[in-house]
Length: 291
Image (cartoon, rainbow, N blue to C red; front, top):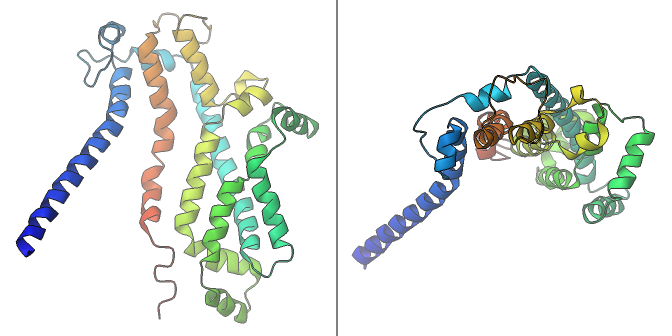
């Protein structure tokens, strides 16, 4: 019986490992193809529909993209909007989530109903645009940040996380004379780093991928974030138009440019993951109630 179980266990491990390896391979191959395609010549991309290792390495796509200083300005805009927006969003979301996590809050159920209601129904595109316009945020970076300051989904995630923190910790802090803000910033938030890291990443990705808001609210193209500029570069590389900002001596390799645009748009936000990875693996209450 023990021998049979060990054989079945090994067979299960082999099948499980093989299946997970195949899933991982299917997942990572498109990324390798995109990165390799961005370094491929137009001729090779025309001959091969799927490239993993370029026969001839070429930087033409990146030369075309970075042939103008405009892309550095757009990158700085996106980085600034992402950093400022994420900080503001996390501050507002944490304050609201902590308040709603308090079971003694008057009107808590009513407020939660209104929050959940916004996840199912919203005013729509035109009312949102009119609100932004009336607040004087047209053609300003505030239009990219304030309308997306708080997400009901993210707030509920934090609220549920805060509710799992033992009440004894808060009661002990209150006995020591800690205020509500002190409890939030000294007790709750330090114990909630996994949730804070996850929600922060959600917000950062949202701000980094800002596209429609920039299309609607920004008239000055010098304020464009990276996503809008990269879309323009793809259009130019497709031969639909051309811009004096780009170096006309650099030929636009159509498919390779599209691949390079994906790399440029994705790589900065991917670089954030290693710094947050350790918080995803930590337990929320690790060491918080020991001793």
